[in-house]
Image (cartoon, rainbow, N blue to C red; front, side):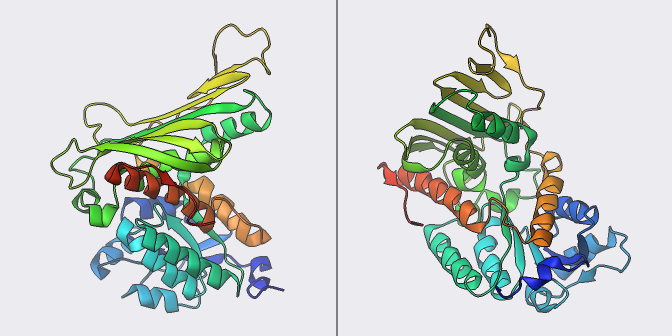
Length: 355
């Protein structure tokens, strides 16, 4: 029996602590408080004051603990799950510390912002998971959105045949009023447009189509308040030889958030929530609109955190894996990092550092 397996079958709720006290942390807190398999124990932030303000907003059977430091959180034996939602540049380091401390992990995207972090966190995860059972999930929340899940089901049924072209776009306008604005506009903290937000487009491309073999990208810096290129576009070659495109832009200040999904197949096509399928509808002569909203909101309050947390808690209770786990999330990040590198160097970049 793998060390740690027994705890997955106990009847008591799993103890959860939040690392971070921002908007995303509130969404996770609400999700945890609604889940009967989890109990929210406390919160830690970069300042004890912000953690205390966060804790005061929640009425729980026991007052939420306000940990004086992240180390204190990790030393709490009641905490079995850490939800890590700090700024991007802290994700990899603090995730590694949580794993080393024996905690299960819900990690906000992006899990890493550099190749060095990619390989280091991969090594830590593999070392720790070889000793004990580790449950992890990277919060690529669109995997729990109804539309991508519906599209995945349709593709599994062969609704559009063999996909030969895949296209995803993440277009967001990061405004100065956003709480993340002070750090997200700095490359050393955010990682870049494709890393901080475009990784959603990369992950859904992999989720719906498969593994990427090579990328070639271009970038443009539209905004002077950011110190890195804020719009990127990349051509993709998948491992099966088919092609695609992903784009990421943080410059959409004059139009609403947009997440585009386009798939062309040998027996039909998908454009957002519209389907054309000669397999399912042999006499079809116009697009069918699926009864699913498109993921066209960048507001964290519209993201399916509850569905993610619900599935994670059940994976813990049942001792079953959940996707995207940390390694799966790192595979999406390798593609996002490769796109960023290609745009910087003007050369194609092959995928394979995690193989």
